[in-house]
Length: 372
Ligand code: XIL
Image 1 (cartoon, rainbow, N blue to C red):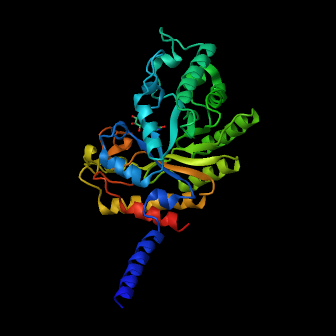
Image 2 (image 1 turned 180 degrees about the vertical axis):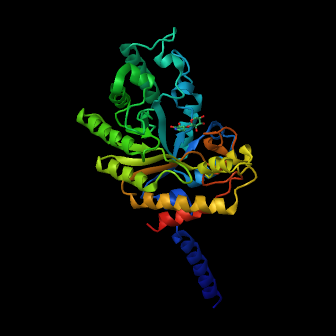
Image 3 (image 1 turned 180 degrees about the horizontal axis):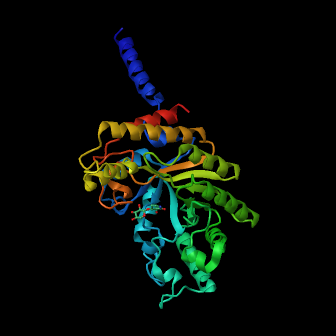
């Protein structure tokens, strides 16, 4: 009798343990398994191991990482004959040690670009031949260093405007549209296994959408590799129009590439507020510009939460075409939006708050992922 009671209680303990296992996943990455990767961008405090609370969240919730800054041309290649790899090396080691997929961001971009890259010492633009040689050397050195360790590269970032024209960056001024296929070719030569992506913001814009679709066709026609399009997805609380956003997902999928949300965040600060408050007169411009210094009121959080849900309904609808969703940072305090487009604001753009707590949206996203 005594033995059978022991057996029964052991069985109950065993069943409780197993049912715990059978419960739905409670982290973003586990809930997203089989659908797409869930990523985040790491800043230098996280890469250097200083932000231990942030690192805990990264390990628990994310299975993909990208460098927020340290792989861009300015930080990684500050002078023509000098590279600075120490942070990028650490990021890659962190990914490998924790079984996290690593994306390279970014090779050819007009911003955070050292001046020497496209300009001669006298300030004039470099010749086409010189720029090609520099691009090739930069790409083969950076991509070659992490060959086989980085899953894919944002080869070219932000080259197309909302109206569909090409940005008149120094790359464009020197090489015309040709700089894009060249960058894809050089990256492929440096690591034939790596996936190659074109990445941009405001991808919902019709003109940009159409030119990106054309670009995919052009690269493919030349036999060049392009695996996915990165839709940065820096969202506002009322813009963009989500129907247009979804149309772009559909257009890129129809063009035959995968889609990634590469820099997902959503500002909680209404852009319409500043203009409206100032127009009413008497409003304190500083407060209108930065309204939530002392915390986000419940109604503002609710507005943010339900718009996040709407975007994620779209993401879930297209999950067969989406291979990764990466947030641009971990906690609200980390977000670049605290300094963009206005410096020194208090924004609430990410799924974890300033105290490193998961906001209710995290549970909701896990629920949405589990129910698909
Ligand atoms: C941002 C970083 O988050 C900031 O820390 C930095 O000061 C500027 O760049 N599009 C991109 C990202 O592709 O690399 C940018 O990251 C945000 C917009």
